[in-house]
Amino acid sequence: MESNQTPYDRIGGVLILVAIMLILNPIRILYVILSVSFPAYQSIPESIALFEVVLNVVFLLYSLVVPVYFFQRRKSAPMLIIALFLFNMFFVAVNGTITQWLPSEIAGAAPKFRIGEFTIGAVWFLLWTVYFMISKRAKGTFIR
Image (tube, rainbow, N blue to C red; front, top):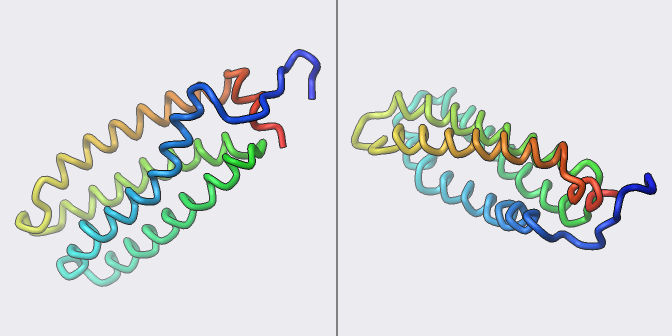
C-alpha cells in the first residue's frame, strides 16, 4: 500500500449508502420477480419468458455475491458494484422492452415505471462510478 493512502478499518461515510443498497437490492429483485415477472410469463412467448427467467436468476445471484465482496472490503468490490449498476440498467432495459409486448391490463404502469427506474439507475451508475474511481475513502477501504 502506498504511504500517502490512509487505510480505513471499516466501511463508513457515504459507503453506508452503498451498503444499504446492496442489502436491499436482492429483496427488490425478488419483489420484481414475484410481482411483475411471474404474472407476465403467461402473456409472453416461451423463449422470451425463458430468457427473462435466466436473466432474473443471474441478476439475483450476482446481487447476492457482490455484498460479500463489499463487506470483506475486497479490492475488486468497487468494480463489481459498478458492474452491478451497469447490469441493473441492462436488466431494466430488457424488462422494459418485454413489458411493451404485454397486454395493457397486465403491463399496467410498468413502462412508465421502467423509464423512471432506468433513469435512476443511470444516475446511480454515473455517480458511484465517479466516486469509486476518485475517492480516497473507497481506495483506502477496499484494500484486501
